[in-house]
Structure formats: C-alpha cells, structure tokens
Image (cartoon, rainbow, N blue to C red; front, side, top):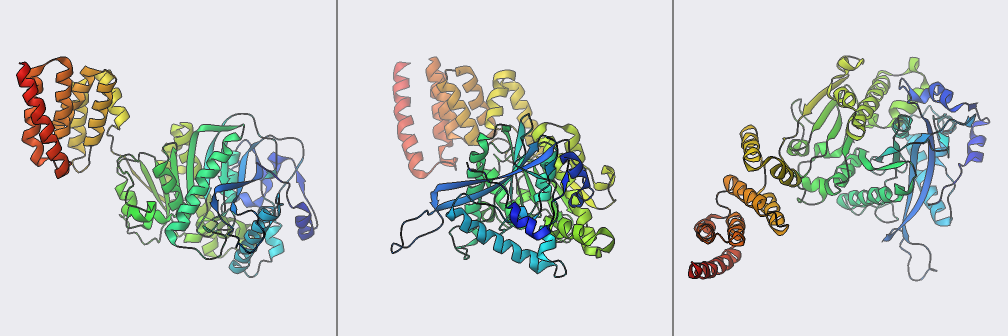
Length: 529
C-alpha cells in the first residue's frame, strides 16, 4: 500500500491561511459538522493507492509503448485517531486534490478532480470554487491511529461519483469508532462511456470487495465485523456485495436504487439471489416524496422476508440531499440564517440520517441494543423533530438456517425441533420455513460424519415437511441399511418408488435412474431376509 501527503500547497494557494486547532476542539468548532455530535475519537484520513491486476482499466493500443493497464483503486479511509497536540485541520479541497504515487495514478486523480469540480460548479453558482475547497473539515491527514479494534464500514457513492460524496458521514462514523473506506465509481474501463448499467454496478461491487481485502492489513481493523453502505446506485452495489459475501453483517442504503428495483436481476445481475439465505439486517432511508406509496417498500425490500428491514422515510428530502454537497457543504457556506427552505430541510434531514446510520451500526456491528432501539423508533421518540423520520421495522421470519438446524437437532432432539418448525409454518404459511435441499444436505452430512441417529431424525423431519421427497426416503433407507434394519430399509425404498412420480424436484432422467437403482437394491435386500 502507498500513502501520500495532502496537496497542501494547492490548498494554501486557495485559502491564504491554515488554521490550527487541537483535534478534539477542531471537531466541535468546524461548521461542517452541523448539529452532529462528534464521538470520542479524532478523525484520521489517508488515501491508499492499489492496483487490481486481475482487471484491465486503461487499454493501451499495440502501437503505443507498454505501460500500466491494471484497474487503479484510490481508497479513501477515515479512521479513529489519537489526539496528539496541535494538528492541521484538513480542507475540503484535500479530498479533491491528492498527490499520487506515479504518473498512472496522477492521470486518474486529474480525471477525478476535474469531474468533481464540475459537479461543484454546477450546483450553486453563487459559491466560488475557492470558497468551497477552502472549507475546513473535521479530519486530520495521516493522524496516528487510536488503539483498539474497530469495525469496517465500506461506502459506495452514487452512480458516476468521481470522489466520496459522503465524507461528513464517514468522518462522523470514524469519530464514533469505525473505520470507513470508500472508492470513486470508476467506469468499467478507462473511458467516460459506460458499457451498460449492470456492467458498471458489477465493476464497483468488485472494487468494494477488493478494497475490503486491501484494508485487512490495517492494524486496528476488526476483521470480524463488516458493513456495506451506499447512496443511490451505491446502495445497489452494497446490496449486491452483501448478497454474495457471507462476512457482511449489515447493509445501509441511502435512497438506494434497490428500493425502486422491480426484480432481483436489477440488484444482482441475475435472478440467482438466495432470498432464503439472506439474513443480513438492512437499514434503508428513503426520500419522503419517493415513487413508492406510503405502504409500499418495493419488490426487493418486500422479498427479503428472512432479514430484518428497517425502512425510514425522511421528510421533504430530495434524492441529492442524501449526499453531503447539497445538505452539509452548501449550508455551511451560506449560513443557516440564509438557507432557502429546501436546503434547510435537507440539512436537517441529513443530520437525522447520520444519527440513524450510526445507531443502526452500533446495534448490528457492536451489539448495542440501545442502537437498534433507536433505529427502530421515529424521530419524535429520538429527540428530533416530529415527523422528520417515519420508521417501519419489518422483522425477518425467525426460521432456522442449515447450520441452525443441525445444531438444534443435536442439542434439543427431533421432537423439539419439529415442534419449532411446525410453529414457524403456522406463523409464516406463505414462506419456505426450511428448504428441502437444506434438510437433505444436513442429513447427508450427518450420515457421513457417522452421526447416524441424528441423520435419521433430520430425514424424518424432511418427510414431515416434504412427504413427496424421494431423496428424503433414499436418505432414510440408507440409514436403515447402515443400521442393519433390513425391513425398514425395504419399506423406505418402496415408499421412494411410490412418491417418485410426484417428486417435482427430480428430472425425468434422474427419476428413471432412481427407479433402476432402487429396484435392484430392493431385490438384493429381499434376498438377504
């Protein structure tokens, strides 16, 4: 990893001065915090430059001299740091301009800065580029990391964002004991042209996954706790990463694209998302004037029936209020007394969003029950304006996973587990409480581990839920053969032949093979009686 000092000379030319505070004093005095209360840590900031050599980004024609072509990743990192005397407070422009380790990354940085400054110029014409870039931010470049171990929160910005668009939220979380990493949304190749929507979402999902690996070397990183978050299309990226990585513990979406998707193909690039296996708690914060009706959550959120879903609508927010430029940076420059009503609402809503995200992560990553209780309440019950945040909590169906099933059977026995599953079926009649494949796989694994009696109970449970399961009868018959219980084995194989025509999980070819094999086994078993 390579880290580099800030482009201080550039910022000094813009501002003409550099203000010094003690780090903790700086956090409370910088206007960019708004009404947010900083945590106990100074916020450190660094940039890591990495190359993902498994992918090409800058395609060089054969006619040009050979040079680097790998995908460049600029990873911004906010982290809890120590207070060490006086420290120079960073300026907003230091997020935009940064020294690069070589010409290849310098070219990338130039592209990112150019795109970002164009965004700044286009939103509020009365604010000069110099004023915007000179805003102090509550962050200290390359500060010494605080002692302790801290969860990782990966953040994916909005679609096409050249640089992190929620640095205020990242710094706020870091001050409360989180390491936050973020990357710009580079196109899939080194071009302004995107190939297609799904290609770009997948490219950034892989960026996030690569960055998680790259950040594992940070000495204060708790590798056991990980959340993925994102704004707009970045929320879609976050959900995609969580859907295929079992080490993700929580998801946060800031007015995310997945809330408005009409199919999982939009989310994952295919229809292969395993809804049953997705048990990750999800916090989704939506604009109140969204396209969804008051009682609608969208296809994706409604389908994630096995996960706890915290779904909030934030009053009067526009989509871009979920990023810092409109809702935190401009209010800082214009002054609260001069804010037009939409900007004032956006500023108020953003601070509420940050508090909900912090408390949700405290609950899911740090086991803080007060955090989840805060996240489940509307704003009026959290010492904020009434009606500012309307919260709905959809509890995930409490049904066992494959691992749960094996542990429960081993600990409590068949009758207790069967009773719990019967109750779950009663409570969730429209859901798959335990999939047939889960039961068959669990029983087979137990049999291979010589846990014969437990395996038999799992196969019996499978037959209670799926009475037409040929594979469950096969598993049970194999158990009886292993025990030397020939009569029971014959009964189980004969039942298998009876249910075989109605078993919709087996292809015609497999049914024919089953029939030939089972008829042969039956002849052999009957000869030994």
